[in-house]
Length: 434
Image 1 (tube, rainbow, N blue to C red):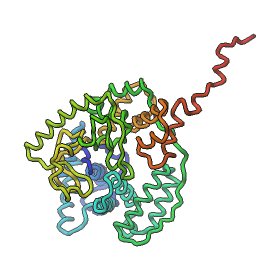
Image 2: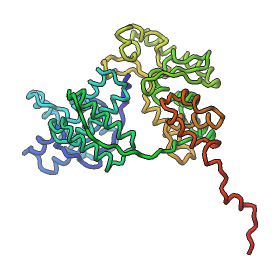
Image 3: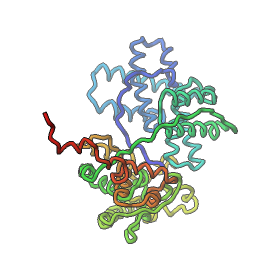
């Protein structure tokens, strides 16, 4: 399911994008009532607004403009001349918006229309929410690079975009492949083209060594987390879960008696069983009581049940109200499901969790960039160091190929070349002559 993006405070654009890329851009440039300085100021704040609005998946409207003003403009100290100019800009924008709607002129940018179309078609095809977000993101970047809807439907322009991504952008192989798949989906499923040959040769990149934390570093990071995030982080490390996997766990997936977790529809749409740490059993038992109180409150308020995967909502429309389907880490607040428009309770936002991990690591002495995935890397490495065989680890991590799991042989101390003693250390006890 899709999770709701919490409001964030975006920064003003460091430079003004080409305003002709926005639906109002040409009209602003052609306005005879404004001098060049005013046009520049209007373009600055309206470009900022568009960046924030699309990031929040909000439509172009008066309500969105008010929300932007409240969440972005009024939250910082502004000069009087700025507030006056920006207020004039929004009065001009709202006037333009009414005119465009009356004349049935698109008020969303080409990038936004492409992103919406890809997301809608992806939902119809049953793509995972994370895949839809990735696909619409790449399709949107491609649309931003062209100048018209006709160019956006030209595979030749897509080949140029991908070639630039490979040769100039120097992106990783996985990123290149994701962008290629996204544009192939756009042309095939959204544009309705039967055969699409983007003809791009992807560039292989070398393997990257994952970030692994030792036990003192892990302890330091966990101690800087709030109780809820700490429980989720300990579970992620103790069970080797991906960030989205731990956030989307349901009550029925946690078996405290058998000491195991069931990961549903993991990467590659595969289910798997992994371990549940003995040290978390009682803590999770108490946590489930807290979640149960929130669940009972939702039933008392007659809220719709939680979102269900795939087509289960059609097959069992009431099962989302059952306790066993409740999220293990539910959000404190309800929000609108972007797919169905239903106001219900979702799980905690993965982005908020990931940011909490990164902030906690910055408060420690760890000198590497730490993300939530470092907990999964640490799980795998520490199991190998403890003697777990590579095939068992592959099953626990849910890797399709054992070659993916083999990268942890480079981080485990008793398996990698890092266990070899440097010859310089042999000189430590020698006395140097004069």
